[in-house]
Image 1 (tube, rainbow over the protein chains, first blue to last red):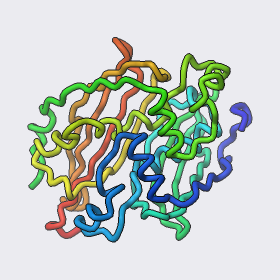
Image 2: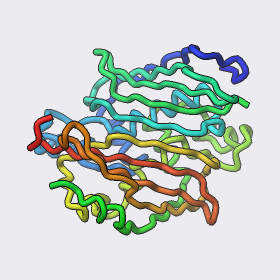
Image 3: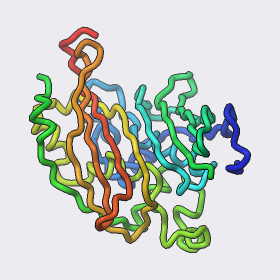
Length: 132
Length: 153
């Protein structure tokens, strides 16, 4: 994507993340600093009434961030937010999607989502990118 | 039990010092499947105009603040049952790029407390001002949702 070609309605090419394995969750715990047991310890997850561990919300936000920086240089990103709408079960297959919804004064607003194979939206995000 | 909003807004949270390390950024990149060498290879980062490996957009979010002893102390101090919490939202406003080798100080406070769905969900919003020396490099907001199961939604 070239910044000068950005138009309202433009879709970014979707990014398939691949299965969220237990190894991924362990690596992300170490890389991110979030060692909370609900993400990496099935016994702790069961003690909290879940069948299994769940993905970190911040892992989904990091995937969406990777999707974004694959499309635009990071220094152009002015703001970025994510609302965690549903949990990501272990072994889920997320896909990142994005669409330009507005351009004002050289600032493009992108609607971002992470969805699972069954259609569940796990993250609704928004980023503002400086096109100037 | 609901959070005492006035008490929350005045709660003092200790600043956190975060020294950004290349190895940590490479592990983060591996964990998220990052293939852009700018985030892992120093030469590629420098060719792209960075002084060192760049810190990716969400790295300075809630997770980094959890990487301390007793990370949930601030929620416990507010009387929150931390087995009933979910990370609701995280947002960033960026002012400067941050790179490996930077030493940052995270200044934290509770910015807001509010309820939704007739009190079934309570949100505690933590604001973190991220500074490199005197320079504000980013501001991030972390919203923790507290589920009040005793209240029918």
